[in-house]
Length: 110
Image (cartoon, rainbow, N blue to C red):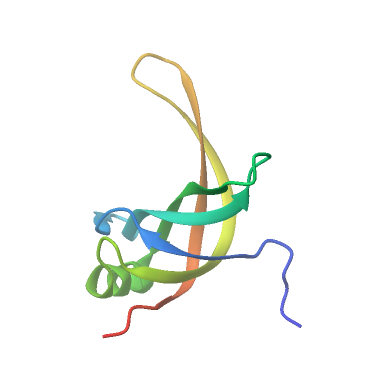
């Protein structure tokens, strides 16, 4: 079995078009992915909860995502969970959780 120590698989919808940026080290794609969960609350009513995930991809995968995905598309993303922090312009430390994609499948029927 493949190494599954840090493995994430999500199915959701793109919340925005893929943003492709170019750096000296290569290309980076980024977008948000909405996943939905449904449950019944204590009053017996069905509820929907939406979670938003930050997705990034590098190099060829970034270009493929940019060419093949757009806002609203349903997609399966495979990758790994990463964390990073940075200081904003006011000196406040911000923390970000991201999924670094290693593969994807567009689930839209075209």
